[in-house]
Image (cartoon, rainbow, N blue to C red; front, side, top):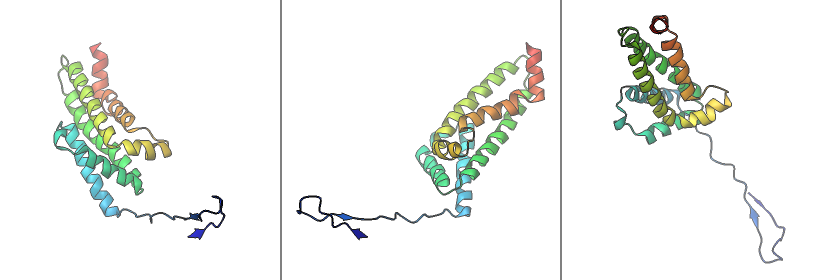
Length: 167
């Protein structure tokens, strides 16, 4: 702590400057980060199953925030991409096995469910979008979801060829 003895109030008082070093940076235990990611992954899967009513979005946001804050943003981002990919592989199976008469309807339902789910997932991972994604020049969460849908469903040969033949 240093003291400033310059008298700026006409001799009426002494002012002091306090140098504050801040709080020490605490790091998140890698095992805790893994446990936190598993919790977030389970929440994402529940959102995809349309079981989001029992989730605490505030708690999920806080967990994602803490992962990014403690330098585990890459684990969170990569885990999100893999979880979305894995889910969409399952969706692709149901779309590709639907009847020709029902293909576009099933595809449209899958698209609407996916985009609605991605909006909720984006809300949970908002801090990651604003900090980790921006600083690393990555695609935002919602865009990742759209890209994965295109890669895993509309460009899948069993779906793409059938869609083209439908028109």
